[in-house]
Image 1 (cartoon, rainbow, N blue to C red):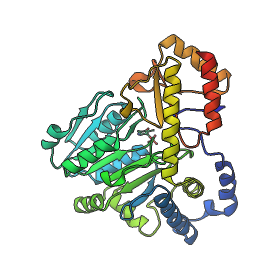
Image 2: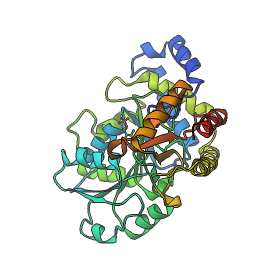
Image 3: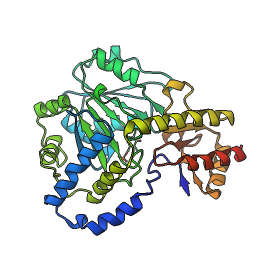
Image 4: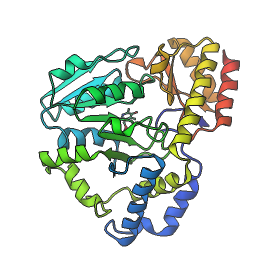
Length: 350
Ligand SMILES: *Cc1c(COP(=O)(O)O)cnc(C)c1O
């Protein structure tokens, strides 16, 4: 089966070897305060930083999931409140998780066809953290760098960005935000159970001034441990090992970014030539990593069944788009020949 599911998604094939290696190396039985573990952690953080071109003064942390990052940000980085700017199911869910922890949480929902206008909402919440979803996995939209640059240049707010379905696929404009995070079962091409959290010096200073240490995953507590290349609790050592080996083997992010964007362009054209319409009409807002397409109920059911018979897994619609869209992951672990198989299948199906 070839999976185009946008998470959990296709895993890099070399992971099969790395799994065996991890077992054979003995690292999985080692204590997380041992020399061996600390070396693994040190090297993993360096590799991630290097391959993803993260600025030298930003710090990298490993936690369990993107969902955990939502809570870490709500607990440890939020001084007075948060403003969630979203256009889809993941952005909305993040706001709901935040609202369960903080009282001053507000939302600014915008249409998937439009960029949000932030000036007015932001004036009313000068000390709130802004929460954005870089790539809205539910509807296939993403936020162009130009908008992030504009927000950054006009406002002094701390900015947190959920980049779960774009980190390790696109070259992210790191300095335009303070907190970035992603779980690894999307563009990293790894099994689930690990997330990468990347934090600016300014965000670290904010967390220090808030001083929150009430939780096992309070950011300051995590950071105390990471400065020693340790973790507060017994971590997902296997996940960290796989991330390490994969980060070593992949190309630098600038090259991956170019390949993903090129392939996305040809895919959008190909799908549209077949008569399909994307969920987002505006080209500059269409995600290069998750492509979402309209298809009415009955036709969608048939297509999915036919795909399955042909060894292809299409991504279901998500949230409000569940029954009338399907999604195609354009993640780095998916090869060009696999994309050709998908195209040939769709050409015959339509
Ligand atoms: C998949 C996804 C999540 C959830 O990731 P978990 O690892 O399940 O916590 C959050 N945000 C976005 C944008 C996603 O695509």
